[in-house]
Amino acid sequence: MNYLKHYADQVAAISKDMKAGNISIEEGAIRLQAVAVLAEESAGTVDDPVYFAHLNKMADKIYSVIDKMVPEHRIIQ
Image 1 (spheres, one colour):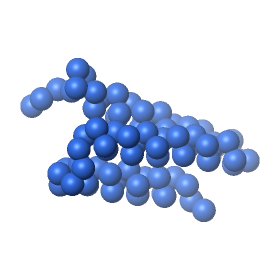
Image 2 (cartoon, one colour):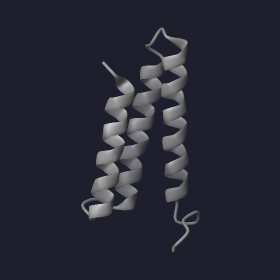
Image 3 (cartoon, one colour):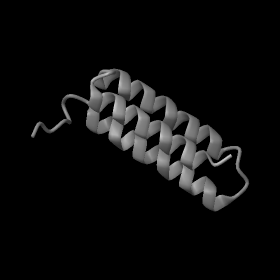
Image 4 (cartoon, helix red, strand yellow):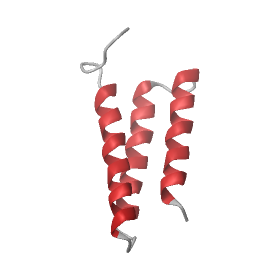
């Protein structure tokens, strides 16, 4: 299974739902956190060190996005 594609698709779907107003930012952050945790757990199951690094990098990027979603950190344009 291509975990990177699977998790990227999940992140895209969550983003789309938030932009459409189907879910709140808070619920989106919770769902994104779940995806990040799954990416970290999947990284622990792979044998390829490069793929391991890619999964961890994806999790880090998701956590970075979640951090930007905190109301105190958001920039309103």
